[in-house]
Length: 460
Image (tube, rainbow, N blue to C red; front, side, top):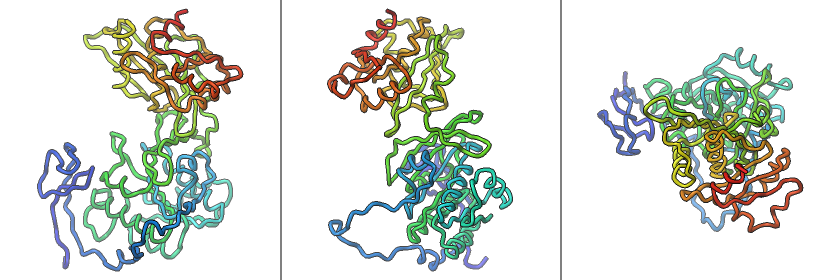
C-alpha cells in the first residue's frame, strides 16, 4: 500500500501514552495494566480536512474581550436542561455515558426530537442501529412529526463531516463514538487511536461551525467511559447515567461542565414513551418506606441547587464467618467503615463481630457529607433494633470525635423536609447561629452536637 506504514504500538487506554513495548505501569498516568497493543496502518493526514476545522482568529488582549452569556439551545426537558446548566451551549460537545440499556440513546433521541420541534435543524447519526430502528423509537417517544430531524446510519467520519457541512444542522447527535472510524487510521473502530482522533475532529468541527454536539460513549465493566481518558478532557461536558438496570428510575449526573455546575442531578423514569421527568424525586424515594422498621432514616441531601429526601437503610447482623463484612450500595464503603469505627470507639456500640449492610433507596449515589449522621443512626438503629419515629429527618456531618458538624444550605434542606410532612429534624448545633433563617412553621428543629446525643434522644 503506497504511502502507508505499518506500525505496532502499545497505547495506554487512560491517557493515550504510546510505547514501542508493553509496560506494566504507564509513565504518564501511573496506571497499571492499561496498555493495549494496536497494529495501525498510518496514512498521511489530509491537511485540507484539518485546515477546514481550525480557527484563524488572531490573539487578543484579555481585557479587551467583552463578557457575553453563552447562547444555549434548551431541550425543553427540565431535568436534562438543569444538568446541562440551562441547555446545550452553541459550539459545545456533550458526552453521555452509562451502562448498556440504561437509556442513553433514548434520551439523546428525545432531545433531538425536542430540538426539531423548536424549528432547529438536527442531524442524528446512528452507527449502531438502522434508520428503521431509529424511526420506530422516534415514533414511540416523539410528540409530533419531526420535519427538521435528519437521520443517517453511518460510521465513516469523513462522510459524517460531509453531511454536517452539507445539511448545516444546529445540533448533531453521534451514537456512538466507539463505532465511528477515521479511514486514515488503520486500526479498528473503538481502538484508542480511533476514539481519540474522531473525538478531536468532531470537537474541532463543533467549535468551528458553531454546532451543539451530543456524543454517546460506551462504558467499561468498571463504569468508566471506554477508550482513552483524554476523551473526557476533549469534550466540554460529561454526563453519566446511573441506576439499577431493572429499576424504572434513572439518575443523570454531571462530572464535568465548562458552562455550568458539576453538582446538578436529574431524575428520570423509564416508561413505554421514553424517559419521563420526575418532578418530585423525594416522594418517589420515600413512597415505599417501611415506617416501623429499624435501620430506616431519612436525610435531606443537596445535589447542586436541588434538595430532596432519600431513605438510608442499615442492616446489622452477627457475622457467621470469621471475617465481618461492610457493604454499601449508593454510599462510599470506606466512609461507612469510618463511621462504624466512630460508633465503636466514641459511642460504645459493640460492632466488631457484626456484618453491616447499607443501602440508599432509589439507586441514588449520595456523596453529600450531610448524610453521615443518617448513616450512623441507621446502623445504630438496626443494631439496637429500635426504629426511629417515621416523622423524623436527620442531617449532619460526623467527625472522628463523633461530633456533628454544620452543613451548608440548611434552610433549603429543612424547607424540603417540612414540605413533605416531617415534624422533627436533627440538625447540627452550630447551624443554629443563623437562627433567623431557620424559622419553620410545622417542623421542629432539634440541635445536636454529637452522635451520642442524637442516639440518646432516640432512645428516649
